[in-house]
Length: 197
Image 1 (cartoon, rainbow, N blue to C red):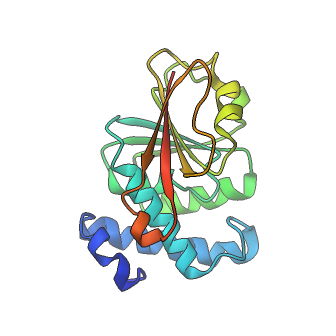
Image 2 (cartoon, rainbow, N blue to C red):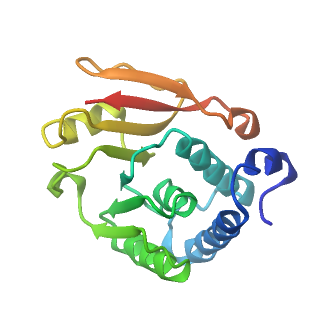
């Protein structure tokens, strides 16, 4: 088990098989990050584990069966959501070929049949069937809205992983800041911005 003892209570809600795969995924990030710059090299092992816990907290808000993770990078939060929900379909979108290569490896290594990977820019994607977009550290809420507002169907939702001090109101859209259930473990004000289109 890679996660520290402080995280154990929070992780009790995750089944053993998913927890094992999350640990494998974390090891793959650490291994590939040495040559691929998947995440900042300044991040400690503890920081990486906290990123996973942050994504697990986001998963608690997801009821939709089809999820698009934009600017997924190393697969956060999309890979975590897919591992926790084998019956949900998760599409990982990124424009960086090195990160796409890593994601394809993860998909194969962890036998993730519910994941599709798209090497593309968000601006060029057909979003007409997307009901839920998730993202972490991709862009600001306003910039993301400007990129997708004319492409998403009505009643779509965007869930962004943000820190509490980020701007959370967007003119013309319903927004709601939701504190992360993992704030105590993360020891920082973390949460999610739900934007309804």
